[in-house]
Image (cartoon, rainbow, N blue to C red; front, side, top):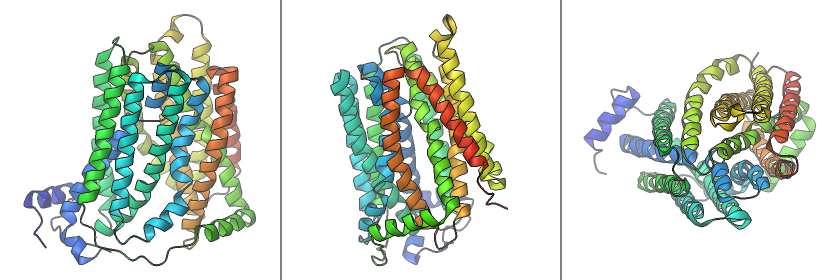
Length: 438
């Protein structure tokens, strides 16, 4: 086996603060030898994935794309549900298939390649798509992208556990998040320079960069040195579902948690409609999208430190407060849209409302993840997570269709008022949950 590259070893030791790159925990000796190289490849792959996720965001960029090509309003309501449910719903079944493969990096690479192909299709639609047909093709490309994301997500976690040792994985994800956040801010700043120029070509370029980033993700995955793993121990997906449904019936706290989580979907569903309101003020110009991307990136960087320690103290309270925050954000943006005059005719108030809701949505995600992990016992945690994700994925599709129909019928601002009421119900529901951290 070839010796690891000296520059990769030095980079690994500098990034991790580890003076000895041979120190490993819970991975084979062969993987330990290749850890500096694999660390660099994981870092580049994560950078590509995170950057592409932002540049092809179903919460921000794709609503803008639908607005530019003149797609019906109800289609906006399906963007986030398709993006999330497509990767959540098949998890129980895809995980069993991947488990049968001794090397899982190829599933990761295939998923990255499919996401790159879907992003290229979206770039073509930015140039040539129009009306309902263009919007339907955008949704079809998003289905492909979402399913591929689910494949990559499962395989990535498996490969990470086999190639990077404990107490190095968090460092890896932290560095990749920071680098990707900086790259996203730069992309948003560049878009701001487009100002009043038409945005179809710039949107296509943006989505091509996302495709290149996912291709980089796939290439790095293929080059990772992975030791073949065990192929035994996979569970039958249908048996897991039946057991999970019995737990849902018998564990009332788990049932109430999933009700609160379902109502808290209001934060995710509101984001694309706020982005659409911003697009309606900017038309096809990309300067407004650049503003939204920069503010979203800054809000995302600030959000985790704001909620992290609070979630360790009481994830129930974080869920409750995030529900209240979603209510206020939705009412604030709806109120601005209803105001007469110049205030509602610029992208800035919608961008600020979007940034505030990004911070609040991070609280929703962090609070419900922490609550779910802390409420479940060790032997049932994996099942609780898989079942809750599957339920959420199914609800996303149903609720997304209803929300889209309401938006088409009542308009965007009235829909935001309905989502505000839903989030308020989520806050009351979360308040009634028992504490699990104490």
